[in-house]
Amino acid sequence: MELNQQSDWVARSLRSVWHPCTQMQHHETVPLIPVSRGQGVWLYDHQGKRYLDAISSWWVNLFGHANPRINAALKQQLDTLEHAMLAGFTHEPVIELSEKLSALTGHVLGHSFYASDGASAVEIALKMSFHSWRNRGHSAKQEFVCLKGSYHGETIGALAVTDVALFKDAYGPLLRASQTVMSPDARQATEGETAADVARRAAADVERLFMEKSDRIAAIIIEPLVQCATGMAMHDPLYLQLVRELCDRYSVHLILDEIAVGCGRTGTFFACQQAGIWPDFLCLSKGISGGYLPLSLVLTRDEIYQAFYSSDVTRGFLHSHSYTGNPLACRAALATLQIFEEDDVLRTNCIKAERLTAALQPLAQHDKVRNFRQRGMIWAFDAIDAAPDFSRRFFATAVEHELLMRPIGASVYMMPPYVLSDEEIDTLANNTLTVFNQVMAG
Ligand SMILES: Cc1ncc(COP(=O)(O)O)c(C=O)c1O
Image (cartoon, rainbow, N blue to C red; front, side, top):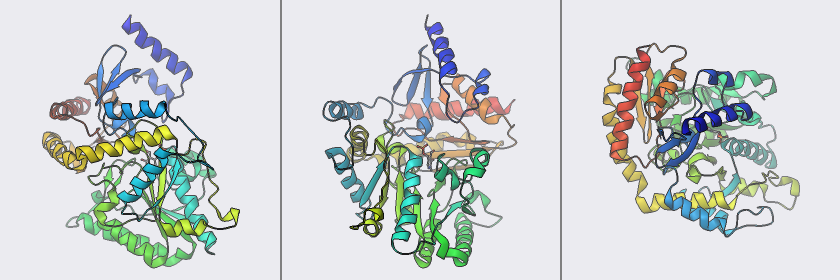
């Protein structure tokens, strides 16, 4: 009965649901897993089989599935106010969330503009940057700079500052050209070079471009510390300091996309805190709602806000989404921030990270592994001589070993929820080693 139910859901889903980021034909061979419920780090299918969500369901889940504290906050909010439009109206959850986020940036980024998905936040930051220059009389500043291997989302504007060929190439004719500069990815270090040396080289590339045409550049957009979607490419915080200085010197906005790396993922609440800098625009999404509801936002400085503040309506930022600042999503975010405060999450994560790094040593030392790397609650390594179908085979083998993992090309990574127990840490490390050995054996 359970088995039939499971295959029923699969058949019905394949008939009617067009799944994201998927060549649907692959499901002729790769399993589609119908999830019936989640609890903590585990997802359960209809047969009761469980999967450790080692990638936090696309990097969103911080405190586990069905978290009792977030659930309780949402249930209360549901009976109070489910939604109200944010133009002309406001409400407690969005106000409190904006105040708390402002405080987390030491009130440097004191204005929050809301949307739903990460890509929408990127669109907002790009539009705001361009429009604020225009309002200040610099309308020639229309170009954006992104990094090699960057990923900022799939909408047309966000895709234009993305540099992942697989996602971008098909839509090339639709996209506005952007400038691409060298990535500070520390894996590019040559013999005797440090990660900081690579950061300096990459910053010099930015300076070359700024010297040539900063009068036409509105902003540079960066995923600070870890470029996730290109395969967890990590860089030295020095890069962010150097680019911040260049942006100040050449009058270019710095947009930091912390959609994947914010909310404690890299060890500090915001990744840019490790460089001791603040951007002009900071994009947040994914983990901010604890992985519960679509919520994204752009935090920005008072001087940007003031560039729009006017008696002239057209100088305003006339951008909106219907669900902007949704009270349920904001309430989930407030509950998430409360857990950070109550549980001293950043400190506890350091202890968990040390334990998982130690447990992963057999993989770090494996003769088929290179570039084992870790920052905060992100781990990655690259398989040597991986077959072209490595990623798909890894996924399929992982589910047989109770793991949800989706390598990016030959880069295997883990971005687990922060609530892993010691036993779950050991399970994750041991099963990943088993899966890796099985897949590499062919
Ligand atoms: C750095 C970064 N920016 C933007 C996005 C897009 O977010 P969304 O998928 O919610 O549109 C992602 C998604 O993975 C991301 O990793």
